[in-house]
Image (cartoon, rainbow, N blue to C red):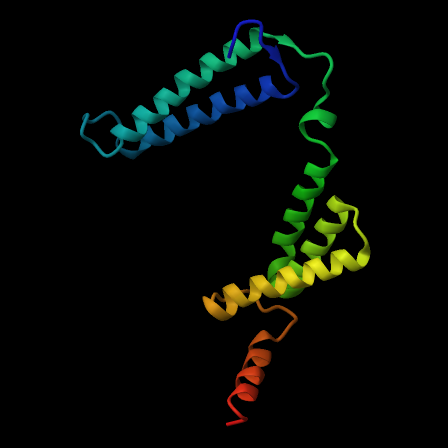
Length: 170
């Protein structure tokens, strides 16, 4: 940080949180093997965490001494509406993934995210979401055989039906 640094909204809280997190990591590193020897399994994690603590505390002290920026606000310049929209949609995706399954949850997520953040037409958002989902599904489910939560769409039966159809019904 250079001299005369202007502190942006949220910067002081973030630097304090980083110092606290570094202290937590140091505590967890000490729990690995204590201060038993320089060659112990906890020595490297303790050294790294101690370096983090010193750095984070120095940065936090310097940040707290700097002049706050009076032209910016946290809600507008640091975490605007689009960021909160994305966070809320990711949380909703995580909550709905198992009960609804991969396909409907991913389609809803892609559609709402595209509509909310791009402001494009409904048709564009539907089309883009469908093409993206089909591409992702083909690569991960069909090519790499990654199992995804089935939910309300019977993917197994659909894939079996396609397999039967392509093999000539045998």
